[in-house]
Length: 222
Image 1 (tube, rainbow, N blue to C red):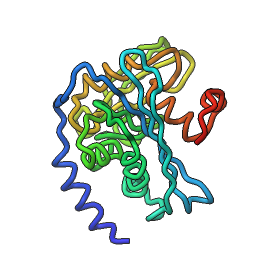
Image 2: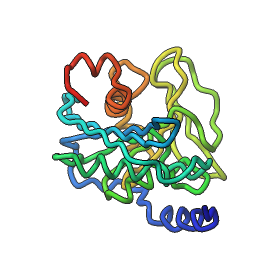
Image 3: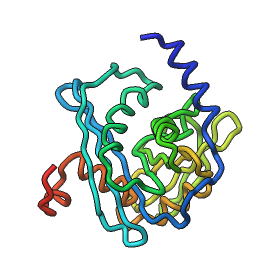
Image 4: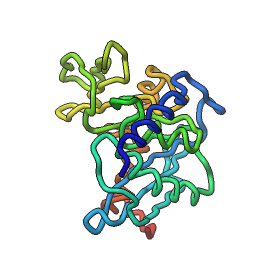
């Protein structure tokens, strides 16, 4: 694995990321959520994509793709491992979204190219990264109340927001993926919260990927 070549590709692609709002449709008619996991000891990459109608946030379509994993886990280069399965699931979607939430980092990445930015560039759709853990950057302490937020700063630059989405839960790390600004990324994540830690698009994507009871109860086969 040529790490230097991957670093150069990240640097090149990061320069192509659009950090300003560039929506084709506003408000969006359809919002998608994406989540990636691994099966069989990492040999199989599983990507789940869900499509929600806005503003009802009702689930109207879901797709799961399983493909052979194409590269090992290397810290800082996860997007190269995850995007092939995401593309496979994306190609199955009958209706493409106007806005996409990805479980992972957007520009909140040492070289500003997390999976939400990488995949957002590939499909050229406004994309937001919604991560459960911090990869880089610093922030001031959050209040305990839901809605408390602080800018996520790295090397003097705001690369996202840290948001306490639910009381007594760890915060989310929200960052622009592609064609979305910092403030708009935060706005749409907050808009899609319905009392859970995760916003509905990635909450449903996680449920589909894991076949959680909330999804299984719908009786829709994977």
